[in-house]
Length: 401
Image (cartoon, rainbow, N blue to C red):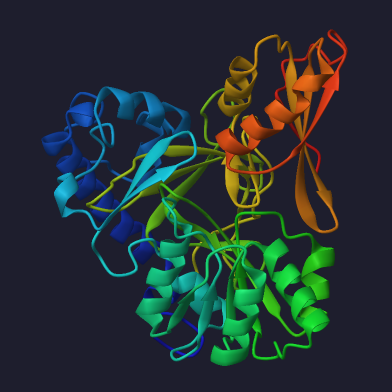
């Protein structure tokens, strides 16, 4: 690890990186054919000649996981090791069941944290949830790899978090950007010295430039990263354009609806191959949109523009995915519901959900709000509208941020 780079792989040549990735990819394909029945007849027996050969292999969609896992519990036959050899077992909304492997920094967050300015000995306030979902553990593993003690704060409990800030003097905040602003606001209101907080690593929710600028003006330099519970950290900000790709993944950008690779710079769906023995995902379609940017000086890997919306209607709210299937489940849970439409907006630099429901009885709003919180694990408002008043456009989730 150097002052600027996490290790020498970040500055290797494009030729060296491609050769290393191709070798690891072919070894991974051979293992998958030999040990995973799902892939045995879907992958070629002969090694790929180059990384472009990925385009001929099948795409695995995130939306496929629930069905595969229901047929072959717990992970749909996609793990490369027995369940008893894994470190942790998660339940993400959907539900989707995610494993954590045993290698240090298995999720690949240490590079993102290092690029944000996190260094050995920095105290990290980790405000992601430690309950069933992996986000907190993704960043705790990276902090541990760098050599940082972690305050396992989780979300909420603002008063207790401010007590921890005052006592432990963390330099690093990890969590969604909205909650960082809340902490700073509450600290200033309560007269708590929060000047130790200087670095923010955020993900899971939008980071408008207005909020980034506000946080910087209050002494916290914020960087963001992009990842998923299935893949770990895919890309991260390092001060250059967009986000640099992580070293443990191969990223393609495909045209939605066709699956064809697009030219660099063209917007399409992010499809990721994770090079890993525990959970070797191949051409995993995230449903997120972005575009490839060229490499720049410093870190030599390619870059993506960042998160540019969803290829499908699923969206992230306060770090949690909300999916059309969940909205449909809310409608089924309350008799008499017709069309439902979830609108997601920004209000006061926070994500807000507002569920519009066609129904003849306005008194079911409270029950629907309870179901919204139960099924999505997020709170939102509910409005009953007249039957036939919502657009007949097939849209279940409207992300208006």
